[in-house]
Image (tube, rainbow, N blue to C red; front, side, top):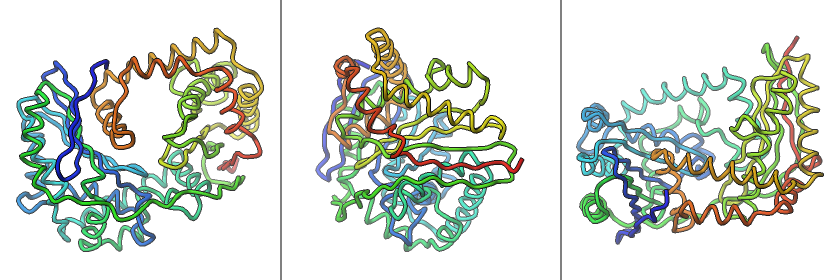
Length: 411
């Protein structure tokens, strides 16, 4: 999207970002800079429980009225929690913009966290925890986080544990909300046909009177990473493994080159090095991908793969081989140009999905107080050199700095 967003800040510190669209469908999301890494040791899983409980009653609405308010006009209301953020968002026909603005203001600021609803939701979340534990591809991801970030909030499972979730009360939720849901840590983003002036008027009507809040704590910076290699035997048919390392933070100058490198290695494209060099060439595995997640102060990169036991060691060696290639051989001119075109195309396609764009714009304003247009991003991509790609590969793919976690099958 080439249109530059319009933005303003309310008197209480909440930032509003507006992107125009000709579609009859509008999107509204409130990003709160509060996630699982902001939990105390007695609160593991509370950010995620908070997300659930926002839908369970306010001072003027019961759960049924919250869930029906947008759905009954054909829209959708949803939310999700990450390690660092909580995002509450709605999709609706443009004529219901004020309805969505008022509803999100109500559930985020006036939820009552009723004990009866909390007890029911505890059972739901604990069932969700067990479901993830039953899936080795999900469970190994949580275990890998714990291995990389041990003794730090980033190590904790976003869902929490059955024991921690069982201990939550309405009082503890209200305390977490008061500490983390402060107005200086919020960005409200709108994508739709209503003008900036119209949306601003609606937002001021329902948000401006809310009391200002300023965060009183700082996040615990992650330090002291130590590589580890752990191996366990599981009663699964398939072997599962993760190989990875800490990487660059969201504000690092190396974030973009490494994002491009990871895309080349094992991103979502079918022409990635891992897919072509292992899955397509040898047919050894179906599940094979790499990912990069930048945080405020650090980042995490990993390769995940699952194979039969007979193919496990060979797959691991081939992955290492691809990492060594990218660390030893500088990309040629044509290879780099192809990579740049691919990344530009992917970003352009992603920006055409408003629900994705809604979150990206919100987080950009939260972190940087602005959002780059596609043309600005393309200029940055064009400046990335083959030397930049080689540098980040040598930094992150260095074998002695990588950790591995393996779940081997019994037979």
